[in-house]
Image (cartoon, rainbow, N blue to C red; front, side, top):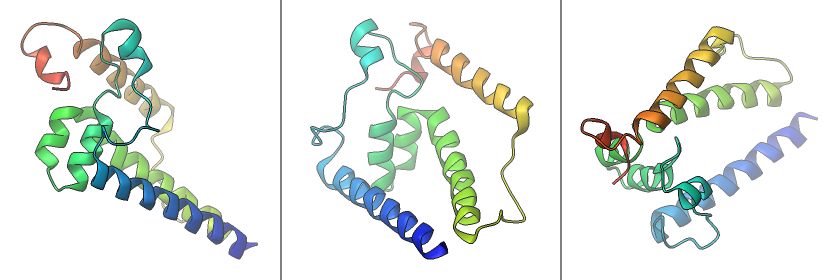
Length: 136
């Protein structure tokens, strides 16, 4: 049972690793299978996730400051989410939860939701300093 779970995890890591390799080598515009942001195409506004592909590309090249310029909230929340999901996956593979978790609780989940919604709104206000939140 654990071997099957570990196999699925290894397959997921392989797929994510291949995706990261192609993103690093081809760039955010060189991957035709990556969809454009539908929200941005329809409205001309930036969604809360706009800029994350370019931020991931910059991160893979070690340009962390540039990555934060593309999407500062995503660059904080995505690593935290990856750690939380990683902890849960390790518990799943073991067959029992790890003794520690990143449990934000209901209030924390609502706080994260409000931060994302506020970021989404503020990055679309066309005046300085809010223009600094929009991806270049």
